[in-house]
Length: 336
Image (cartoon, rainbow, N blue to C red; front, top):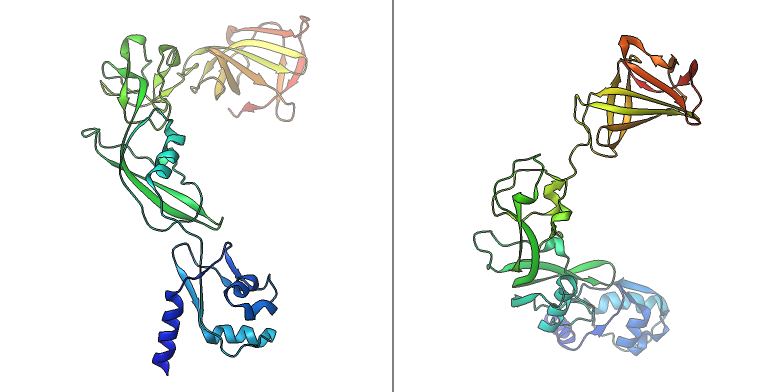
């Protein structure tokens, strides 16, 4: 008898399974599979639906529990099976998905792609998952992994093996460029041609590298990418800087010495020998910093117009042009 039961179960799975659209098998799905279960509430959760490409079988014992609970009348309850809707990818699906990322101008030589069942939906390929071939063999095939969203609860993985090129424009180093060196127009040459797509948009015009420096060593013949470039420091350690300190309506200009380096927008430490204080200042431009006083911490001693300590010139002025001599300014200096 046990063998007979197994044969009946296998026979049920050999037949077409009931397709379920959601991530749960519901009473409505049972009723579509066997009309005797029409008395089961349509939204009653029977079980989790299987992943795409996998069948879920329910034997007579499991179905009998549900039948007794809801008073299903049936002479015999046969096993049932359920599956998710699925399809097999075709090349046009894969090509269309890739062109959405790289553009229709990309040259694609699709060698192979996944051909197992996947959920309905568009293939999704993301550029960061496209790994470049080795520099020594730029025409080698690469594998690009993507996915199709499976009912919002998981990603069904897919893949494609291909050769891909795209018409690109880029700047290439004519000679080795050391790290932190300012890049001059003579250091690069403009190039264009069919090549593996850049993972990040490269600078393709000289104006895009104007005034920038190398973040790491760049080899001769290497294409420049955005990650290789950075704005140079506008203030270097030891530089004499023009500082503007503001507190409410009071503006104070003086010269100080930068004790740390920074780019525009960075915070640096400035020593003002005339005021005998260190300040945290924001870099505004080359050799220029700004100090904003919030009035909640240590007080800055009254500063008079004219010559400060150690003979440094200190120019204290209000924004309206009136002298700020003798004004007490609360500030946040760096601890000495």
